[in-house]
Image (tube, rainbow, N blue to C red; front, side, top):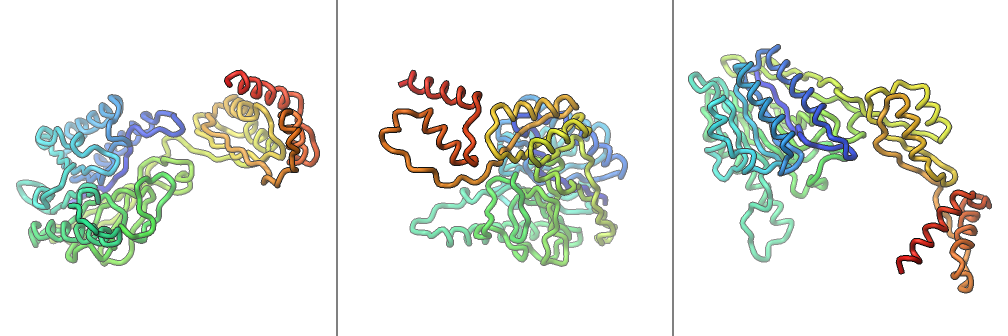
Length: 390
């Protein structure tokens, strides 16, 4: 049986307020093509379908259009679980309706028996435990319990939940566990939220049961396999880079195949195409401007890290325009100025002359150079605005 593992779509996510619906639409079109090309029989999506608990109508429409095409244009079964970004109730509201289209959605999980499915229904060849995000807040409150004790009780809860799921699976079938959680040893980036880094609340890879064939995880956005078991415990990662730092590594989905006797005969990573390139440009004003004028920036999102020796009024707009002239879209300009040194002492009598204090501060900070006329005028206007508001 051929199985495809993906997660963390984050439909509706914005990057510096830019809507990314077109990127998600292209990804879902590509994903459908991969399912058709490889004749995938089971699609697993391990949480964080949407970026927010209340997705926009555009995001919701995109999701359900894809599910309809999945039903209409393929013969695949689909299992979808809720992540920490999703509203579990919102996601599984049409559960019974979607099951008529071979799509099984699990948002809430208070009973392990309701998380276990076998596919295909008429001749089962694989068993899946569709475990959604299990929040530590769902634990029953115990008075006088320390945080360490609560964290350990959370781990034991997860461990028992997965063991109970496996106990419900037919012994002769390959067993796949789904999850949306942080496993100790996982590498995180800057775009994950609500991830325990220190490991106090982290699941250990040894917490997963024995006699399992694959663990399909979501939550971390970097594709990776956690070591420590004789079967893959794997994060598929997000299909598009959710922050600029994620552009440094390739995005993937994973294709598995099990033989009739349950042996894993295929374990292949498939690289996700870049649907919109994210670029970071670093340097001083001269080098960044030169890059803007000579590079090909058409239809790219750009982050600029600009090193300055002195403040420059309007430099951000100037940089954005330079890239825009070449078809690029600068989403952020981060300014790096020399580290501030302790300023000169200011006599009390000088406090009544903010423009003079500003000029002395500028000279002290920037090698004795006074502020230029534009900067001085801007500062004076700010002072007048503040005085007028008092």
